[in-house]
Length: 391
Ligand SMILES: NC(=O)c1ccc[n+]([C@@H]2O[C@H](COP(=O)([O-])OP(=O)(O)OC[C@H]3O[C@@H](n4cnc5c(N)ncnc54)[C@H](O)[C@@H]3O)[C@@H](O)[C@H]2O)c1
Image 1 (tube, rainbow, N blue to C red):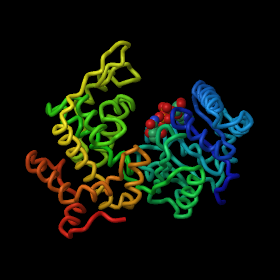
Image 2 (image 1 turned 60 degrees about the vertical axis):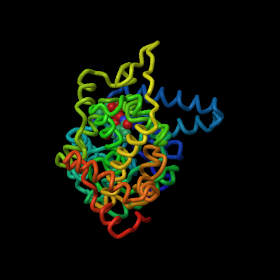
Image 3 (image 1 turned 120 degrees about the horizontal axis):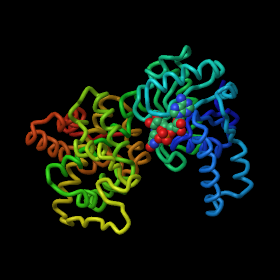
Image 4 (image 1 turned 90 degrees about the vertical axis):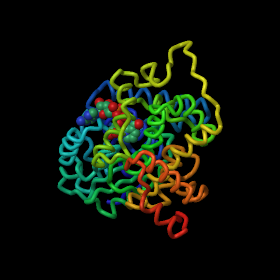
């Protein structure tokens, strides 16, 4: 069975991600079956899509007729029974390996033998989820970014057991939905959630050390680094609970590598329920009338902050390339399209000069005597061989 524009798509879990994925698939012209075990969540998703499309009509992006057809293609179902007609099912339920395994165990008896089964997990092992299936070659990770309808990147994550044809078909289908795809190895955090760790972790560490306050670090990363948001304001938006959990998972799953060690400061925020914007307070206060702290606009300090975080990010990108997590090209694409970095990190490293980046890391490594700052073998090799990261 070849996936094409007539394929029926199933989406399970109508939280933040599932709702967006259903929107993308229906907009691309597919019949979409949507299920959530919680009927209220299903209803909420249905209303939220109607609202989103009404806004898009107001903005002139779609006509009423087009929206009617898109919404007509979505069927909100109250059980998995109807999923026997699906050619691809994308699961976006809770991030819990046991719940996901149980779900796929149930799903396999409902779907037809050619149906491709996919998980939108951000950090769990696709191979482990696939282990409950009889036909493991048809299970794959399809990792959308939030908000799914707007973010262009989708990481395609084959498990060890995934068939090559499944990777090809899924990549082609997702591209036909207007998305940019990259292929990532089934390793903790895949590409983006692995490489981006120091953007947060190193910023939190500098804050803990008293190098600068959150407002100054955010200012430096925005104004000097060219990033859309700084690490503190961005994690307040994502949710300190969600961001901390991803950090801790990646750290644990990578056998407690000190490079990924999470921040105690962020853990305490999470424990205190100070999740950020959604709870009214995180690193910043979002109460009515609260005054945002002013950054210390010291250019020299700002450059030091950016150079340290950037060196760590580049080191992660280099190591991901070294470990064949993805191709160099896909690594750069993932960071620009998945988290809006101003440049691909490997390209950026070429511009800065690899020897400059290595020098920054070696200085940190010497000063802290901590494996957290060990330079990637690939970076060292390239400097030794006087070559750039190439494509
Ligand atoms: N939120 C993000 O930014 C983001 C980004 C990329 C990937 N993801 C991943 O996508 C998945 C979903 O995340 P989310 O943020 O949309 O979660 P969410 O909590 O917003 O929604 C999950 C939904 O799944 C439903 N559900 C739970 N168990 C179910 C089951 N057994 N059968 C049917 N429905 C079930 C819940 O009722 C809920 O409505 C997770 O694996 C997450 O890691 C999340």
